[in-house]
Amino acid sequence: MISIALMLAQVEAPPVPVRPVPATIAAVRANPRKFDGQVVRLTGWMNGCTPRSCFIDERPATAAGGAGQSLSIGGDPKFDATIKPLLPTYVEFDARFSAECVIGPCADRAPVLTIITLRSVVSPAPPETEN
Image 1 (tube, rainbow, N blue to C red):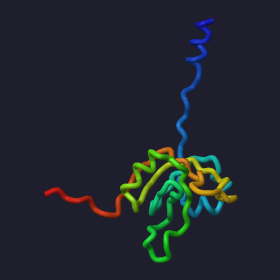
Image 2: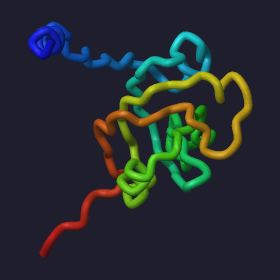
Image 3: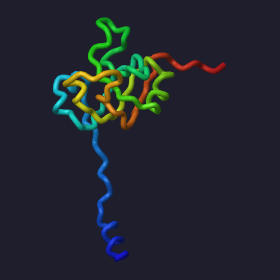
Image 4: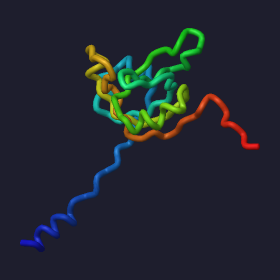
């Protein structure tokens, strides 16, 4: 009995890593059902992030015409703590997309994007130099 369980455990394939789909904020907003449930790779601006509101925007908030389209990032204390001291900043991340709160209304920090991997952060201000 134990040998059969060990054989079955060896037959099981390891989980296949999910490949993110490169996307833009505009493309996801234009066709949310197409991306629903997928892991998307997005780039954009994080202009602010609070416990009740956190978005990735197309442009910096100070850009002519404003921040453009945005997608809500679901609550994630680890992500929030990482990103907060760097705001505003340009980011690239992989996140699971849920169309529910794009198609219909949701309140507060809607879980449109659930962060999987924060790939890069580029602070808009240069780091201080040491003397």
